[in-house]
Length: 238
Image 1: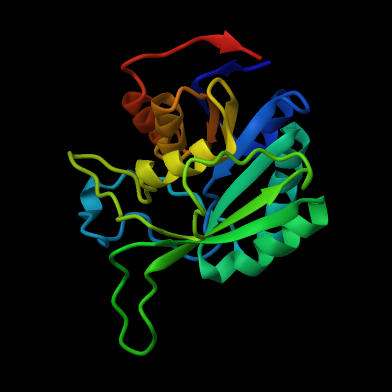
Image 2 (image 1 turned 135 degrees about the vertical axis):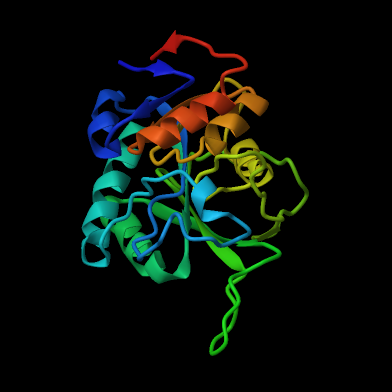
């Protein structure tokens, strides 16, 4: 039994065992990239010494097995009406699609997050988008709220950049995650983020009156995320 509205430090595959089967309404998560990523290198206007250490990665050879394991847990804890949004770069998209099929998810949509800036390249196209896979546990029962008329599968949302001294290596825009939460859950629903990072999913949940649980293996990131959430903290159990 875990308290909700809290981010826990530890391995998501271990911590997920403490979440009861069918307890979660929605999973939103941005798993490790599965590529070599120098989390403290200066990019996207980040100064290296201001980026927190500890970004955790999964070797490419192990990525499919890793993804199958966490997706199996995600499916177990979801209600029949539940959905999973998983963010992915193109380099590991195949493994995520294969894993979703292996564990029994039904793919509902393949969304694109289009942003305003990519890493400049000389001999290939600049990447300026991110993939968001929407899969559901039961294709006849999933939630999908009509918050927009005929929503399109390309979401144009500018990147957010950190202000202040310390920052994590990666960050999703709250505006983007908030939109996904509004489409696929209701007020009071429980949202799980297996790889919480800087806590963006939790911040979006607080802004939309959803409950949340987050897991993050890097202690510095947990501290950073909890600082963002420290204005008001609830203590409710599942």
